Length: 245
Image (cartoon, rainbow, N blue to C red):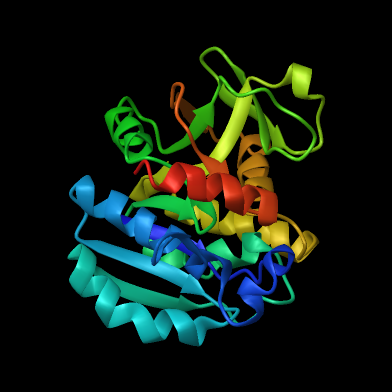
């Protein structure tokens, strides 16, 4: 199993930082970025390799590749997304379809979170679980969050931002454990998703899998501090949290 980070997005709401950097390389704790924090988490749970999907301002990631490998003791593979500024992240994850075959812990390149999230996912492996989503069942939800409804013994039934927050079991935080045996099914669902609409999210690919009868499981992460960084207010929160980790 290796780490996988989606870091291809432009992050336009974080300008001027993202005029020259992808969102994953915007500093959140001194010189440390979300990508630094995520790679440190991967190393802390014993992973020795990671792949990073790059696109917008990818040259900044390429420039740091050797430094990141040396700092975190990880062998890094960079996967180019040739449509990062045109299409949404269902296509971005599909670009890493060969990487998925190794089994991955997938992390969005804009999620500041503690290593306990990766530890929780790894502890949830087994008993036939092929895809496990990290789920926050504590946070109060609003319209923007990626909300999830689960059912006992059936895993995820619905995953979308477009639902009544009161109906949701919790929020998907942008970190997933994907076993190798799920890779082919997931890649096919992602392809169907972006071919239907290139603006769709990879979570829409998860929903496609659910529609096909594939069980996706969840692992509650408990009461931990984390944030998805979309705008400057989120960045301020991310900087308050990142220093804790």
